[in-house]
Length: 256
Ligand SMILES: Nc1ncnc2c1ncn2[C@@H]1O[C@H](COP(=O)(O)OP(=O)(O)OP(=O)(O)O)[C@@H](O)[C@H]1O
Ligand SMILES: [Mg+2]
Image (cartoon, rainbow, N blue to C red; front, side):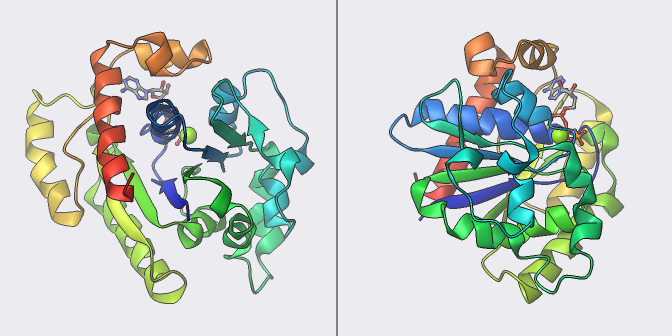
């Protein structure tokens, strides 16, 4: 059975999408025999734009269908530039999900129900979440085995992390006892700054951190503007190497 990993943080711009793209591409490249699915749950469609290049799926071919209770079919699973990497796109209408599901008893289970039909097909499903702890993100937590939480020290707040941990505990208690926090990933990280040195031990009190942290560099923006992953755009760069080590840590946590 494939493992489902969601990339969450209600803070904007902390590298959720970057991490989702590089983790999917990194694992797909490392294990060409394994099928990987990347799901974009964010109405901003950033991951969709980078990975699907110029393909623009109709709303009915995106993850929106899953929230309407439709079963996934081949139209929802798009081929990408890598043979073994597939993608379910997002659409702008995802912003309507909150009101669409507000009166629905099974509102938190729509994504999990849909993924049950396809999880056997994939070794790993990676979900890029929007910057909120909305019903969409709760659907991702209910559907997942693991959560990865990208954290940027400059945007970090102890309160922010505490609310993620509280939400995770509520989901574990009520909806998904199987859910685990795999770890926090420090992104755009500069270990030389005094704020980094001061905050890292504080964060570790709230949640486990990956051994690797991701340095800051413009190559991330450059690669994604050109709709390339880092492994293709700058194979030997320190940020690429860091994401490679991160993929290694995730691979061993999911038992690859
Ligand atoms: N290691 C890095 N070094 C420099 N810039 C980075 C790095 N990682 C991500 N960025 C840049 O930071 C910005 C935010 O990244 P990203 O879109 O991945 O964050 P996000 O958490 O998904 O944002 P949102 O909350 O809006 O969905 C982007 O412009 C991205 O190119
Ligand atoms: Mg994003």
